[in-house]
Length: 236
Image (cartoon, rainbow, N blue to C red; front, side, top):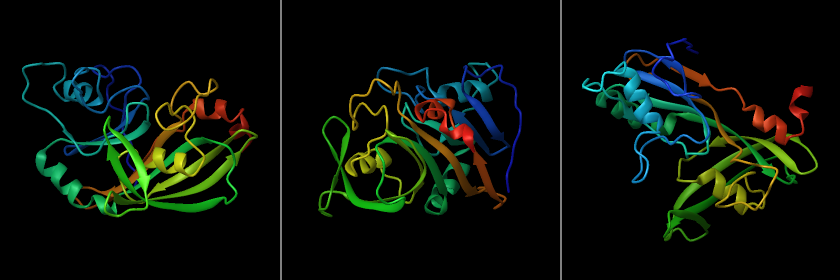
């Protein structure tokens, strides 16, 4: 079941769009460069702050607020779910293992195998970095499935199924495989052709927290990806 709606954008910052809204959830399309939630140094330029302002219709004294269900990195764009109540959030989190998430990524180089699954243990280190390890005592199991959609001389466009949801999982797994995400300043390599991280949360499928209906939402691939691929995607 696919839902679409066209809500007012009056209280939303440029680039942040709402794909779907009902009495229990908001599904947003987050642009690259916008935090999901606040940090010690940034409180207001976040999807959470903007959508809280949106449900309050600009009234700062309103007690309405939203609840974060999951997060995307600042430079990752795409589909993001928020709940309108704690009950809705807890119901969504309780079924999170059955939620299906697909991503698109432009990575450096060409894969020998056009499909595959990367499975390692992921561990965190100081400075909030993540690294892959074969030692189960050091990290948590993580699996990422990929499929090559298109290739150029320097880049590959991948469709990715996130089989587990660890921090920085896709970025670490792809870098560890020798094909870092283009524009990844933390795990990738210096590349003047990629001005930002080429990672996009393409779609998400889950059951509505109260009706139980199966919902599917997706976001358009950023034009930035097409430019990195030399316009090759327009040939389809």
